[in-house]
Length: 458
Image (cartoon, rainbow, N blue to C red; front, side, top):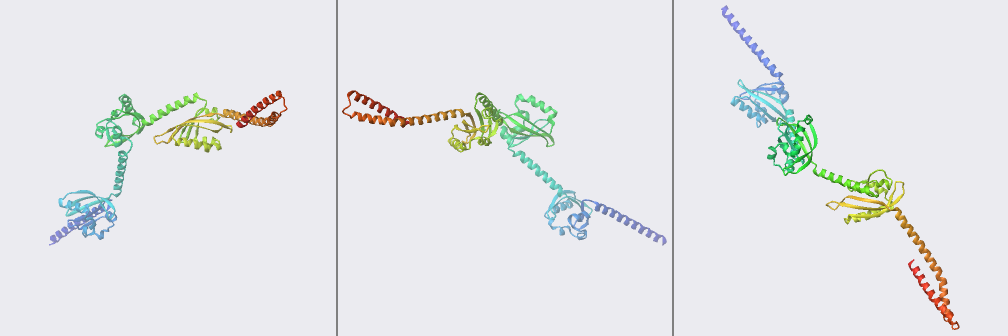
């Protein structure tokens, strides 16, 4: 009997030890689960919640005492239409582990979930990935933005492989500008849009260390599909494209700009030649900007040392009494689209005195009939004007003298004519005197006619 009791006591001791070990093991597991930074819960196959860790409490705002022993879907009915419901059921039905991501509107959170069958139920790990999702979305938006900037840019752009030099991508502007279809570009290398004579230099540049710089800018020549060679400014940046080392290139067609610049340089050269060949003050006005360029005449004739003055400066030097009339005359001729304009006005010298000038200009109009440029020459005619003024003054004096003399002589002359008339009617006058009187009267009448004509003209 004692042995039997002893055996029972030993059996109970073993059970107690086993239960205590099991309890300690469960506590260890619970401690581990509680120490997780991820949320964790367990349910039975009938969806009764048997475990709910602290992180789940915090993240979902659900205390464990309010959910343990209760049906998961009774408390989270709003999750039934979502992926949570379907994936949890699929994991149990197919006895498989499943990972997925889902948005939970009630908490406005994104969750990354891992669930797997365990014992008689399902174990579920989940964590908040909302910030990661936001970052991913922002990255996607940035990629979309830069993709749009690339695809919809009005400037030709392309990406090419640094190793093979083949095009990897090209935007619509490049297709339109260069004349190649997208498929053609994708079968080409960047050397095929360069003139043959430029390729050795291009190859040398591509091999140089300086080419490895992240950003590189240069002016080069490109070749279109139709054979036209264009001058372009290109900027290249190092990028990664589909895990390949690549360069993103933007091209700006400068052909028209350079042609215009060349034409301007030729025009300036002609301007300089004309300037050296004349003693006039030659000027060139940009109507849009108001900038005026002058030749050496502005200094030699008018004493101003700078060669660049604007339109407002010129207006400030025109005599105030001449400005309104001058502007009206010029505007009238421009409104009539007259290319040649000639006007006279007074212009201030650097010494503060006004000079009379003859300004002859040529107006350039654009396709819309608006003046864009005016080129003219300003000649100092002060001496000529002064001479004319002096001559006119002298003429006035002569007129006064003539008028005075004519009127002074007419008085006595009238007396002579009257006396001659009296002598003619005297019957006692002898024949010789009568003849003298007749001649005197005729001469007096002739002189009177001359005096009348002088008076009439003065």
